[in-house]
Amino acid sequence: MSYSDKVLDHYSNPRNVGSMDKASSDVGTGLVGAPECGDVMKLQIKVNPQTNIIEDAKFKTFGCGSAIASSSLATEWVKGKTVDEALAIKNTEIVKELALPPVKIHCSVLAEDAIRAAIHDWKKKQEVAKPAAVAVQ
Amino acid sequence: MSPDVRTIPQGQQELEQHREQHTNGKGIKLPVYMDNHATTPMDPRVLEEMLPYFMEKFGNAASRNHSFGWAGEEGVETARERIAKLVGATTKEIIFTSGATESDNLAIKGVAEMYKEKGNHIITAVTEHKAVLDTCKRLEKYGYRVTYMAVQKDGLVNVDELKRAMDDKTILVSIMAANNEIGVVQPIAEIGKFCHERGVIFHTDATQAVGKIPIDVNKMNIDLMSISAHKMYGPKGVGALYVRRKNPRVQISAIIDGGGHERGMRSGTLNVAGIVGLGKACAIASEELEQEARKLAGMRDRLRDKIMGRLDEAYINGSWEHRLPGNLNISFAYVEGESLLMGINDIAVSSGSACTSATLEPSYVLKALGTGDDLAHSSIRFGIGRFNTEAEVDYVADRVVETVTRLRELSPLYEMAKEGVDLKNVKWAGEAH
Image (cartoon, rainbow over all chains, first blue to last red; front, side):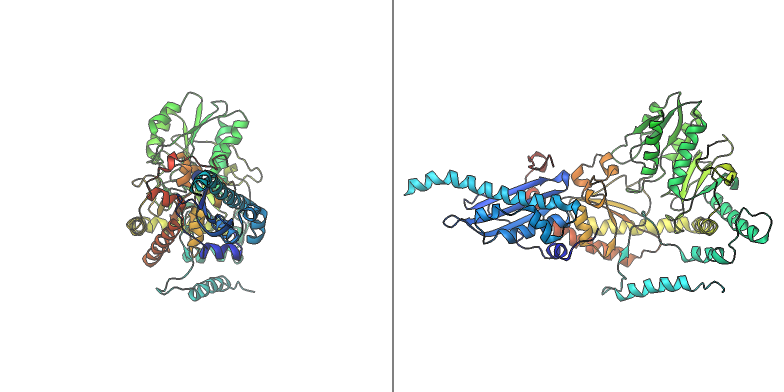
């Protein structure tokens, strides 16, 4: 199988590799996929609670080159976006950007799932955190 | 025009020149080929022997009335002698085919048809090559009963289980000599002996074994054996089937009908040049097998030590003791095979990862060992061959260690494992995927 230059670039120089404190209230963590399927993605976002803007994003991925590239690209794209803007990212845009072949479309789906899972996790934390914040006021 | 024999070596020179231009600091020509179970480069001595049979000695080996035919026939018969000598057979027991897939088909379908009055049961193993498995599956459609034996964790067939699987309708046992993925060498002598005691025909797909480890059809009680040229430094598109002629005499129905070549078992004009190449490859193996096996095993052990000495959680797939000298199959936990191949793209090896196959299923051979899909996805097969060097082994080891280390830094599974998370107890979101 031949890879597009963009996939190769993300594979060789993945952006935003790393981990953030998943216990932190402004960090949302998405863990999707399964080892036996050959793909697991962990995508984390750090959100400014005032602006709802994603200020930082990190990922780690177990998977093929296209899976690594899809998640690397996802972190680049969510950074600087609001949570709602990030939710609007579609896997088809990732497919297009990375020129993924049909057998690798599932990698882009997983990346979209990872974004959603991370945002979902962050939102859940905000709901829990809210009453406490009111109490402080 | 006389054949310009320089044309082909010049092509090789071009490849060599290309590789010279892509050398690393240590003088290793890139890419390094270490996928010798897929195919082997041809030995120059084999090519040299074949060349006259394309243009000068082009005759049809079946032409009995002129010197062109005789020259072709002579080449074929010399090859037959050389193959027979390598495996302890007689020349009349060697049938030429287009390769091991055809030999497997001919052996299994040929026995099934010939002995259908006697029985309809065939025993094979789940780790066989698809040429055997898919042939058996087709026979099931025609009413044959097939037992696909499970293998043990080390990849070996349990001979006692095989004995129990046999019944009075069993006509054929087909167990490979050495596995193409994990290099595991089956106890074929033991299986052959038992089959002969029970009067059941024993076929072995010896594609990976012939020329690599000693094979003797009489000592091992083999009745039918598939042989391929291109796995032993010969040309592609040619192989042979050994068919026992006495003690007992084994008969098979043809699957290709026509001019009655090869004692009626395989019609079709013989691929003379290819057959000559197969013969030469066997002649070289007869001379050099023992020494070469020692050399390859030494390099293989070196590769293992250099990789496993520097990486934790790397697991060898299949028996270490019963293994082809040039085979190493390792699973690197927490790293996916295709991404590993991508990182070592100046090295030609194979992976059992789903992503490298058309089916998106990880290696059925590794699954059969109980390896687990996650580790099957993480496997790499190294096939060391005649033309590999120790410097290449060292280079490959360094590149693998460096790439696995990099990818583990990128792997959430490695991170979780280091944090003490038991990955088996994690509820994975994508399990339905």
